[in-house]
Image (cartoon, rainbow, N blue to C red):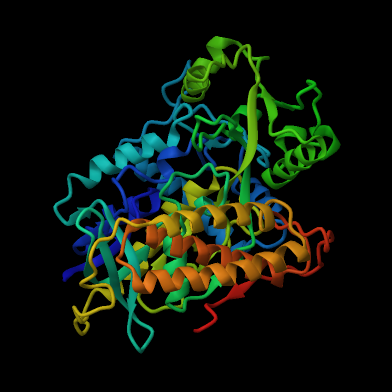
Length: 522
């Protein structure tokens, strides 16, 4: 048994920044499924939204966020995130994060523009912003004696007692295939999202909804899982796994075109390529279904090579690897599952409905994103809520809890290499999710999804109970839970709003309500 004051599960911007702060008050066990750097944060290209320019204002950023959220944002939470953002940005700059500056100034940031924003307010580090933030946070993590990092450790389930109090988690040591019990006074889910539940995704391989699924099984409230954001422009290439073409490319003048070179976004929204992501993704999806094509093009050839190499060095280099000079060639793109606006329901301090359990980042549903996340607000939410959890959790550090029994369901399982059934289930779930609970939905599709998900869930649960524990088995169990949550939530929403579009209910109801579900057996 491993004891700590804090158990933080996940190593993105939310988990790492919380670990640094929590280490001031107690010892921290930080577990991550792969290596510290493996997170969605590290892949983030565009940047982090924050009011820094004199021509901008909190009111404008709040307004843009609420507009994108399609009436479902928690206004109070949005105001807190936006207004507390500059202080949190100042903290990571002090830690060493270097955002891009204007050529002629050492003090003025080069601010990007992305869809849904009325002002340039995106702080970025070239087109590798998340990479820079992760690098700096990890450098600082490695300096702290109070933080013990457990790489290649996969959380299996939360330890929750009869009083609905979380006392830690059961965790698999990936390489040894042994389960350990991590006991903590404060447990924090910072596991990221669940894009790997879909056939096409911009997310890294670790994004299998582990935190949301564990909280669901533990009886926590889950909110708004029907709102899955599909990024409009993921590179379409059989050899390019999950490579995102940043929204900032469209912010700098990129135009979406069909194979015949025709621009089409003017048919869907007056802001054309800078329309909110859900509109752009649905527009591309509609054009592909109409034409039968597999992709559309993103054209940024109006910009010079020098500009593109400076502004988008990573995208330029990656496309060049696949034989495309984006100053001359258009980029083939397809929508891909990108961000979950829903998740574990939390209050203003990141508290879930399970005692002593917090959730932050994409794992959580704080209400700031509503029915559609405004571009580059996710990294901001991560650092703002990490600070809020830090402040609130101090009161939980006094006192001792009864020890968790070392005897648990996961101990003493032998290793098995036979994962054929799980590979088959994995592929079926992802294709089912893409076809039936993807960008466009209908009652018929949702009913089919629910029936098949229930069958698959029973099969997977049976295999899980009676098979040796592996990372693959844990992940498949989690993505079927995610698919179940999305389907259940989508069936409850009898309207189209933001990222949720149902062809049987193309209208938006006058009153916006959150969708809240629990596991069926809780």
